[in-house]
Length: 96
Length: 312
Image (cartoon, rainbow over all chains, first blue to last red; front, side):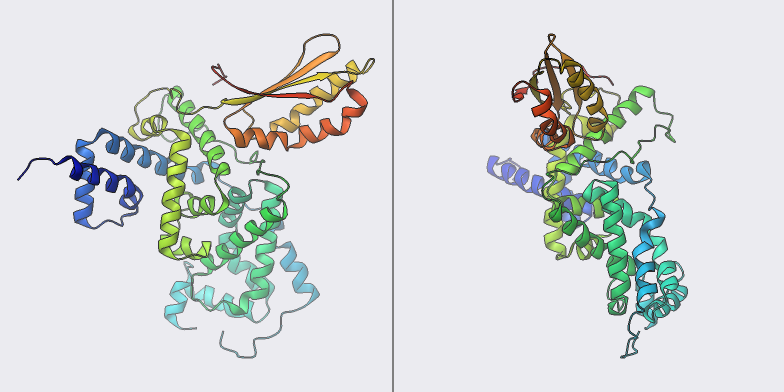
């Protein structure tokens, strides 16, 4: 029977919206992926959601390369001070 | 340490790392530094995104390295060395933000320059659009609650695996995933689907109301004491560099309405931005100088921006 029952479509829609993030995490099994893609193909709202989420993730991933933050040299200052002030106790269990 | 543990320490040359780890655990600070060095740029970037302030991020990282150094003998390779460092950094960032709870929002992202050079031959308009979107994204990130920001920073910006990111955040994987999902939905809502889908589909369309850079504002009326008009004018001009440092202050004007009447008009993308500005350096400086410069306390009116034209 191929008649679309409104309630089933609504369920699909709610389910799809909840699993957008999982879709991109690769957390959905093949069957669930297909269910989401099939629904998104017919649902303007969900297909826009998928594209928006994809755009967001691409933008976030690109932020790192764009900002190229370098740590200042001072980052080890406290370690150096600490090391000259007192050496850490030797590990008596010796299992390192 | 077993070879399996060695593989999990996350270095390109695990044998070297094992040797360094052993030395560091024996009290060799130089070895500790060599062992940690490959991770510091990313740790600093993570800290900067979590606390939003360069000086504070530097402090967080110094403290992170100190704690790692003092606790190095407790590191047994249960997680990668990198993940272990991230866990400490996330804790330190959280501690630091709690300590500075007086300030409601991290502000200083000056050091994060947006590079305009792109490897693609995008049209200038398209580049400007993406740049604008990135600025809005940074603002939206800073407006997230810290646990949500942590999830996005670790997983989506710096690309840690879900397992590593969950470990660094100090929660289970399932809880981490649901937090991450929630955080992504909030960012998506803040930026708007229209702007995001145009970023994803590489179609050149200007963002139409997807990002409200100026949604709310303030109008502050200032009446100068007699004879203090020029001093007040100079003070307002001198406040500009302070405003420069506020990423959530989209537009700021100091104006003169009449010989003794001045005003500040400014606009923000959201309520958080407005609050941050009111709790920021300019307001503090003004409060300090008010008795000397003003005939009466500043009159602060909040406003909603109906329409605007901002520079690209």
